[in-house]
Image (cartoon, rainbow, N blue to C red; front, top):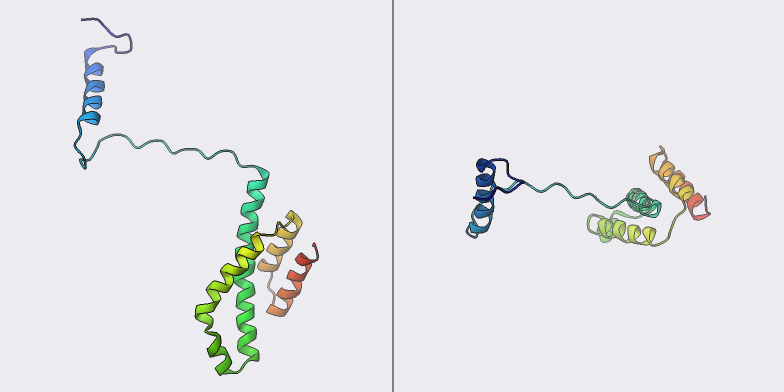
Length: 140
């Protein structure tokens, strides 16, 4: 019997052969004993990718707070009947999603993102929060 250079002894040849046969001969639905594959690595991220992810995250935080402020304003300035007609529990999630879509569709500079994060993380009442966000619109 010819010796394969990659197998040092018969035992390693039998192990490899049994692994190949078990992989090829397994029945559909039968569990396999193969090792889990190594996690795939994501391609390197560009500065543009990082900025885009930062903008999406910031927009989500800004919009959540902005819609909460809108709801608070409605509750403070409208009659209970008008507030009930707004159906805030149902309309607020859709409003947040619309806000996020609108926000990410307009590229923001890194400075605008920093300002937006400062607005979100700051301890502002809603009117001051809206004033803080005005700085973003003006180009921060």
